[in-house]
Image 1: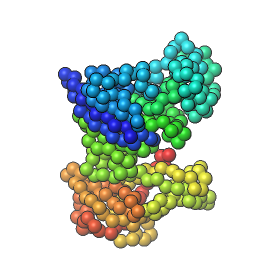
Image 2: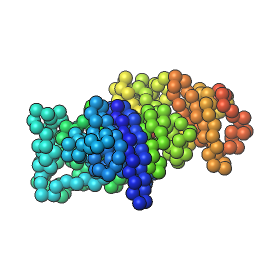
Image 3: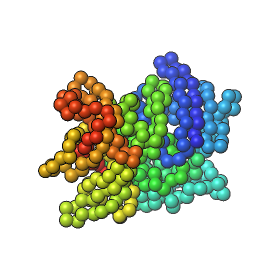
Image 4: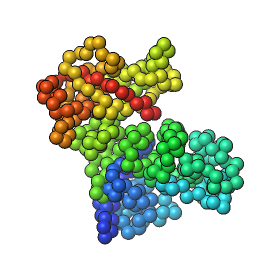
Length: 356
């Protein structure tokens, strides 16, 4: 586990945060600007010595009472919003700077590995980082952090300074790291689409406090949390590639709650993928639809209904075997259909996005 408790007071902001998460995969700190995500990350890094509290990473105590492990002794890597590369060093020398901090016998991550993981083969020979694009610079910065062989990797909104094209370019590399790394990653973001693609665990922050944490699928399926009220609220489904329909260029994804057809994906049968279904793309029928152009129709039970403003409601649907979907419909539709908790319905999924 990673267990932390921090109290830090500024004139205009206070952090009182408690954190307890599994020390594996990607742990996303999510919340609006000013909620304390970066401050909590800096406390974990040891960059806020005024913060009082405790921090234990697996079996190592990094902070407790008067015992404060300074930042240079904490075995972590830190990736900032802006890629802070050394302009007077070549790309290779920037990478080696991180690696040289670690004695050879303690290196668990090697140069050849990160060059492959982050697609740096064509960049490593550059004499200077000056000509790199924003996405390329950030990939080099991530590689440099990994070459310190950290036991924990901290990433503070690493995509926020990039334009849309650069974000699209770098995201596959982050997804690859997600599959390759055994190092836990704490990833700060205020973009729900990034979190849905990368995270295994989700920590929600608001006004300097952790308000909820847990597995990504479980958290995104809760109507009592702020994520359910966002425009892009929705569920994430872990599924396996079951069939390719070459004639219609489609792929069938199987998951415990049923099957979904999506545009053909270049993945082998049996591969695990992650799909996202937005609440606004799920409509409700009380009887099995016939003659519909919607290909994805799932039997489900209404588990919860909550008002969403004056004209809409949100529904949490159980589609079987622990699979949760969200649906956002008008209050009028709810009343006309007579929807109530416990009813068996059919969820019509108008769109599915394959995100990983």
